[in-house]
Image 1: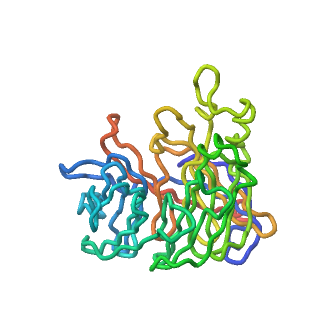
Image 2: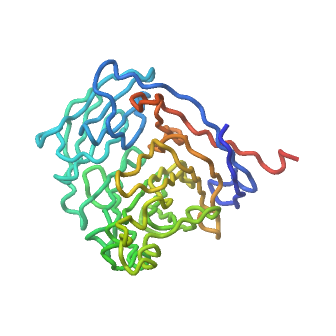
Length: 353
């Protein structure tokens, strides 16, 4: 069992079961991955589950999608490097899309949909959006949530909710007042967002808050990412260093600072997030662990933390039922992987008396 510190929740339609409750985080093994002699995961980015139970993992280093059966054994590989149909020059994410798979290529600003048998089915261009998407998330197996990287896009909405054909339902979230206009700050800030069941959750790497919106862009609430151990903002760190990213000794002011790196929408009112120490020189590896934070919408109280725990591995997605999924190293050499689920258990105050 993972040690967790938890808070109570107020009543809200759809969240009544969380009222006056405490939630514990329990880690459960799901499966160990077996690549059966094929190239192993090089840089996993997202973990999701198809309707048939197969596990989908985007590998942005190999520019492909690795598919595993329920037994953990590699079942298929979709996509490959290139610029043709079903190929990727800069694949940044991929997810299950019902029993299909959708992957996003940054260079072409294009979504590629693979059929259930792994063949190229169609492409959706996102070049018409008011920003160049950095990531695209599947929402409710029927919509896409596109998020811009902050650089070059400040002063305009950074999120767009899209229909399957790529047409827009809504655009929203402009953090210009929060980030400011300093190029140093903007270059170190990026958007992290995910949605489910009518709610889109948004965070910023380099900020200290999280926001919740409905699918039309109406703000439902916001709150601190980690009220127990508040996160330093990139803006404050740079301003304290006289507007510079680097100190006189050449080190980065953000290096070693706790920063948001993952956002995973759970059910209609809660979100799981991962905070890690930033490594500005070699990059941050989520699979090395960090802090799990779970927040829920509360009537008239915005977003409030309901669970906080140490995390062994990277929060890369969720099961179809909403349980967070973690990918972790299963060997000291970091050449084998295992998947665990995080079960959030609720114990009401009344039941504990």
